[in-house]
Image 1 (cartoon, rainbow, N blue to C red):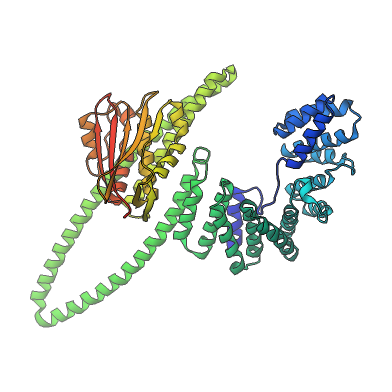
Image 2: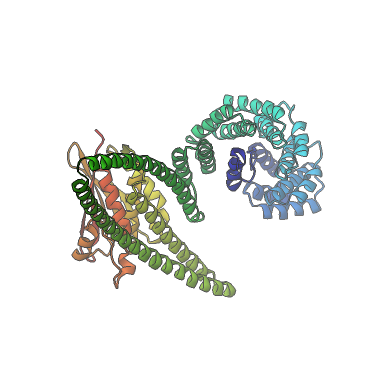
Length: 576
């Protein structure tokens, strides 16, 4: 697959079209004017309701009340508004034929007729009828007061450029996209600039002008850091990953793909974990291949040296040297075999433990999902919505548990094979805990658990940010899992001295026995399955935490009593 096809294959996965177009939802100027009309014509009750539901994005109710108004009213001005409400609503419901019919019924005297042409252009752009879309957009291209219609001329330019880009008319596409770029840069709207830069980058990328395309991909990626639109963040990160893959730089591509993964919905996109693992596997394979080549050269060199020594030794003392050599080789081979056997035994033990974890935990999760889905099917027939809600919540919890297990297994495997990337930097502790709290807010609310972040805002740790988040997520997940309803979880910190800081995670959960604490603190040990393993778990997450804490030059302790809660005490170096 060549680089362009590969690039756009990835873009098609995550976006509805290859290129971005500007398509606003509700127009603020139209919104204000229709409200004024509703106040002026108070007797037109159906119009008032239609405009109210239109502004509330309730498309079905908008269609109902606008139709009621049209069936009885002779007010042509309000009728034009209602036809637009209906056309826009049909467009939002992807009923493009009906939307086109309604918008064609609007009089050209309608004060927002340029907006009608814009909406028709967007409809044909979505239908990929790009020449028709261009005709409608060009109708309003010369309109001098686009801002009074509630949209900017830069949007029209960008949509025209997008159409020409789809038609592979690159010169015209470049002309309009750069017109849009100039206006957007003057306005300083980062969110819209991202789309412009992305389209310009794709324009050059399609023409194999990588030296022109890549700077615009990089610009859009830089601007994505400043906006709150997760889709734009994801798209920018994915494009950078594709660029690096086309360059053959899998390590950088992997960093961008990890960033892309951070913005996705973890529940609805669980299968993307495997995709990430696949790319990490590619990177690992590339590294192993390099190592194999180095080893081959070293082996050839060793063979040459050994042969030279062998023939030299024969020339001096054939029998004695031959005997000593054979004996040394025998001892060497014996030690090598013994080391390999011990290593193989260790790997087999680890493999068996992992298979045990995966087979037990995933089998339990899948079985629970099967059972819950059977109940869900039965409940659908009875239309018991309360029970349906409980079953959906239960399925979500099971899926989250399986996802956490897979995530821990992935990071644990990367640690064991020394492929996990660590980069220590200054990290603001309070902000990291705030982010973790936000990620787990639904689980905390589900069990009515009070979360308190009493960490000082002046503390900065010198650690690897990604591994610190993994540690906090695992420990908070355990604290929630083992806490009862209406419990409390507290994050606090003590500055031991100028070099180290203690982070304390305390809960009011079920606690644990001394024996369990001792087993969890044993180095490199996974918990064997016990009678209460459904509560305690396998300890894989905690073992992962211990290794990552150690990688960050930290320490880990546990204080707990049964039914008295648990206190996890972590020590990390501070930023000097």
